[in-house]
Length: 258
Image 1 (cartoon, rainbow, N blue to C red):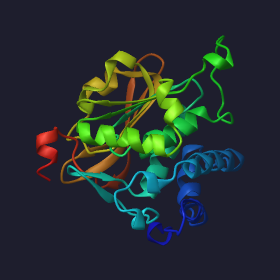
Image 2: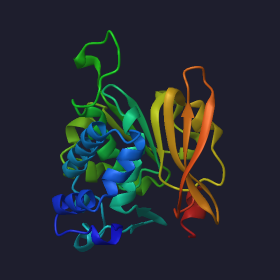
Image 3: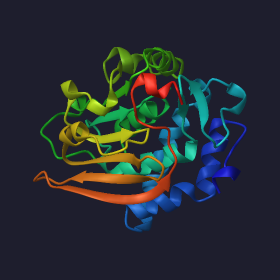
Image 4: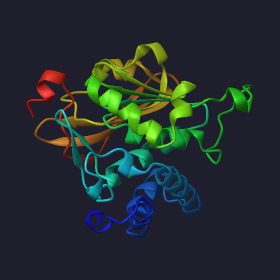
């Protein structure tokens, strides 16, 4: 039903995804069918996505609220909104106040913004900690290997009202090889990868915090989303979730050929 979810405004786009069951189904799976938890989780994602106006993160504003991927230049795309909703849903239990999130292949900055609002959301369950609320500062790192896209994403985030979060270091957009992660701010409670890796990058596994999750498409011709979960003892569990089609996770030179 993704193709029927497009809207004439950002709010209508998100409401249509909710009405068509895109959010409800995946959130229900994540919370094991618990209805009250599913409703709360869906509401949390809707709030976050409505705060992020997709028109600020696309090249062609006329198609901003289409539920489809769009090219953003340099061989990169911004994923369809329903795929961002899926990613947010599958990472939701790991997006807690004070958490650290890495967004690999951050592109336009759109999902980095959504992830920021999710870990900032006061309705997310706070982790057990002696830290005060004021110390539970969200931190989202977006890493993109095309410097022009990094600069553009920063402009997009500022346009979308997140200039203060950037100034405070709560959102940080950097240029680098996302396959290597961003070790200086590791470990991460959640890692999102927005392009398909031919195999699981070990650096990302190493930078995942115990109890954390990676959401990553893996494969070349045949691609699937995987959950990479690390338990408190460091044991890794890899679960195949669904088939997808993403641009490849590669270096800048190879990407711009595609």
